[in-house]
Image (cartoon, rainbow, N blue to C red; front, side, top):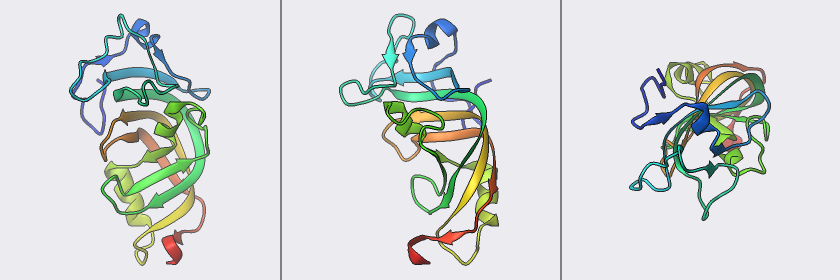
Amino acid sequence: MLQYDGQAPVATCRCSSDELARVGLTLAEGWSLSATCGLRWSLAGPEIDLGSQAVTLDEYTDGQLPQGFLLIEGATTLTGKLSYEPGNAGDLRFDAAAGAIAPQDKAFGAEVASLKLFGPQGQALVAAGPADLDCWSADAEIDLSSIWVLIGDSDQAGAHPAEYEVRVVGPYEGCGGE
């Protein structure tokens, strides 16, 4: 069963190869689109019928991308920066090298440039960080195999790894001169 943050997305999911073939999406080698859920041009609008309509996530259409969930899958280890900064949009994130999941010259590249880390794994990473810093970052590696991407205009929007493991490989540094 498809799950996002431990629950099924509240939307109709499309997984057939015929429907997914109608989604224009360029991903880095080793990554593929496995499902779309509830794609629509606006929150109140109807769901895009991938049986008869094609959409692209490589370029903006009228200044936007369709909203909804995508599940992309692959298996890779990325290097980058693990950062903890309390806020409404999520406290813990991993910023990988540009283009590691999707080319940065494509619209979708911005959606997966930073990974939001939630749940028990994210909480354990925060707890393992330095207690004397309110905000920190460190060089790290992340093993990934699937990512839910929520495209939209909310604090929850972004790329959320469903399966991951992070290893801190560099020293912790405080934010803003801490």
